[in-house]
Structures are given as structure tokens and as C-alpha cells.
Image (cartoon, rainbow, N blue to C red):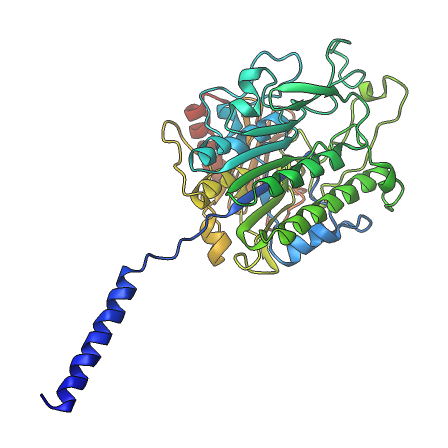
Length: 451
């Protein structure tokens, strides 16, 4: 055999061996991301520096916005606490499952037939933790540890559900901090350290589970009334006590981001920061029952209305997503997005399975997050209790209530909802009204058509 022939044989042998080695190599495992959802209570669209607040400083939340994705048309599932949380954790309009608030006097909670984000992610192999406000039922069968969460530390309902804030309660209705399914200490009116307490527990959870995929639901109790700030943050803001509270929250966000970085988790963790509804305005007289002035100045920015309304200020809230090296920096997204959409998005990230026994109203946002695609959502409903009061489709919003009759707004031209265009666009009114009727029939809800 001549030398060229030997060379060709050797070359073929080496080539085949290399190809075999490559073909037999197992594909590189893609690690599923950790997910942290920070859910504020009553934080308005205009409460943050990066959303235009002229006095309150929020450098750590600003960092998330500058290095991540900021939304300008992100809607909480409701303008009230319990329904918003029900929608968030199930991906379903709360008119389907929990349209009204629960409290110490409640004997029910989020229906046990509902599947939560934590249920799905736990089934997919995630460790799940809930820290902060729950408000979806305080009896054992409704607490977080019975709804898919491995760990719970927080309050079973709102921090104001004590006397004199809620005059229908009795002295026996005391506010306790829970760990898992047991009350461990009474909180009452002493809430100065509440934000720092939750922050410490969240950081401990991250450190404890840094070597396994985790889902952390961090639901702060503030700036819901009664607001209070730790001593070291009091009188440090130019915006009074309310500003002190927001700046305390910002500090805790900085500590959370620092923990991720120190534990090499930053590039494998999606952090979502948002609020359950808009700010609380127009406080009823009962808030002054003990002679203490209780007003505060949460801001909805230039949006009309506030918490408990179906104007934009009630449910359009700040929302930021932060995920270094996955989410492109310094993005501003103006598409319609809802807190309902976090459910299918988190399930997709965890490679879990969407429940198929009932309708899911959320939309998967992975294309938006990873590839800068437009939001798949083009419309949403605004509900108050069991009543559908408004619908938004693209730039048009139809709002119908007993007191305000029919209102049609073009939110692109008039985001503050100052100019009613119903008389000029009767066909648009009829089209949107028809869609409200269809949804009402599907959900067994009500629509008020006051003309």
C-alpha cells in the first residue's frame, strides 16, 4: 500500500472518530431560571423615580428599569387587593374565582379548585416560597402552604385589618404574623420593621435554595395603610412618611439584587417588580376614628382615578422585569400587558404544564421578554366585584357604570381619560359593549348599561 493510501485511511479514521464523539455528546443542559415576583401593595404608577416622581428617590428600582424592561401599559388584574392576587396567582380574571376581598371574618378563600402558579412550579421541580401579604383566605386549607408553597412567612390578610381601621372587627380579631400555617407573633400596630423583616426572610430563602430552581413570591404589605417606616429611614425623604416608605422598599430591592449577585444567581433569575393596584385616595371618615390623621399621597401619575376604581389609575401600575444577559437593557414597552400574563409566562419558563380544566386568561410573554416581540395581548376587561365595568381594546376604552353612564376614551390620545368620545364613535361603543356582554355571559357576571 502506498503512502497516500495510508494517509487517507488515517484521515478517515480520525474524522469518523471525531464525528462519533460529537454525536455521542449529550446536549448541554439549559438551566431553568429562578423566578422572583415582588408584589407591592397600593403602589401607584407615579410613586417611583423612574416613573416620573419628582421627589422620591428609588436608585435600585431605577437600576432594574435601566438594565431591564419597563412597562407603561401594565395592568394589575384588579384595582382591589384580593381579586388582584387571585388573578395574579391563577392567570384567570378574578371575576371567575375571587371577585371580592377576604378578611378576618371570612370563612372561605381562593376556591380550592383553583390551581396557583406555586402548584404548577412545585410540580415542575421548583422550591416555592411566599413572603409577605397573602389575602386569599386565612383558614388552614386556604393558606399558602396548602396552595403550592413550600414555605410561608407573612400576614394572612391586609395590615389594616385591625381596630380602629376596620370598625366592624372586634378585639378578638388580632393581626398575627404566620410562619407556614401557624401564627407566631402578634403584629398589631407595630409595623415599623415589617418591610425589613420581609426582606431578611426573602434573602434567607434565596441563600438557602441557591442550588435549586426556586420561585419566590415577595408580597410587601406597603405602601398600603397604615404606613410606617423603620427608624433609620424616617424623615429621610422629601416626600414625607409616604416617601420614607417607598425609599425603604427601594433599599430592600437593592439588598435583594446584591444577594443575587453575591451568590452568582443574577444571570439565571428573572425578577419582576409590580403592584397589586393603584394608590389609595379619598379615605373614608372612619380612618380618623381614633383622632389620628391618616391621609397619604400615593400617586397615579397623570392617570385618572385610584384604587377601587376602573379608571386607569386603579389598575395601571408600575412594572419592571430584570434579567441580566437575557432581557435587553433599557427597554420601554408600551403594549398592553396584564398581571394575568405572568402565570403562563412563569409556567413556560419552568417547563411546567398549564391547567386545562378551565379557561386561562393570561398570555405567554416569553417572546416579548426574550426577543422583543409585541405583547400577544390586545384587550382586557376591568371588573368591580362581579360587575364588568370597562373594556380596553387597542387604544380604545369603553367604561359603563351606574353613575358615569357611557364613557369612551382613546387612551393613546387621552391617557388621563378627560374627553368622552362616545357620542362621536357610536359604532365603537356598540362593538365594545357587545364584547363585554359576551364575556359577562361566559363568566356569569353583570354589565351595567346605563344610557
